[in-house]
Image (cartoon, rainbow, N blue to C red):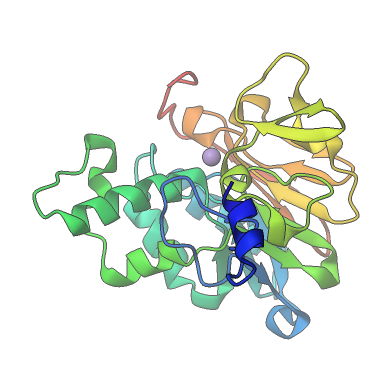
Length: 273
Ligand SMILES: [Mn+2]
């Protein structure tokens, strides 16, 4: 109806066909799809780490392991999102990653979005008390919040032909046209009428989304602890469920391509939690 009205009037510009809202109507990051070039990377080793969820002790250990595996190299650490929430030390993880400055980059995950929603709610209403599971975020600084708000949905490294995203990417749709919510929430794809329909949960006839990804870019992602490490031709799923007593896993995206992991020090959450 609106489209008809616009075309009849012929005077008004039609609104953009696609509005890329995220789930909670959060402000979008200034750069939703970040590209990094060789000038930024130089001769650094790039080590991509799976969902941390506040598992600070394991993160420190894994970063040390990576440093010993790439001696004499500066390391650019990249994170697949869900760096915070659910686990024991979200504040510490956030400060550690921020303290690394340009040597650490993360995409945003559904948990960064969930905590941002809570932070913005409490900023709007001084009386709003953060639910227990978000209490860790009570004393975040203005800069911490800005850091979370500016986390991009994807990070692409064209020179190394890879993309980092939290959950997944719909094949055949350019990065600039992906739905933000899908990027942080999809786990499965169902093919219907030759279209890829994403979903967070398994549906009849669905398969893990990465099975449909045929490149050419390699995608590093997280968000799917239940499946654990996923090693496909053009995709690597790095959520090995540290939070649930599994491991925290990382992989070098250049050089040795070595994969490293550390065991969780506890089962911080039950798998169905
Ligand atoms: Mn997630």
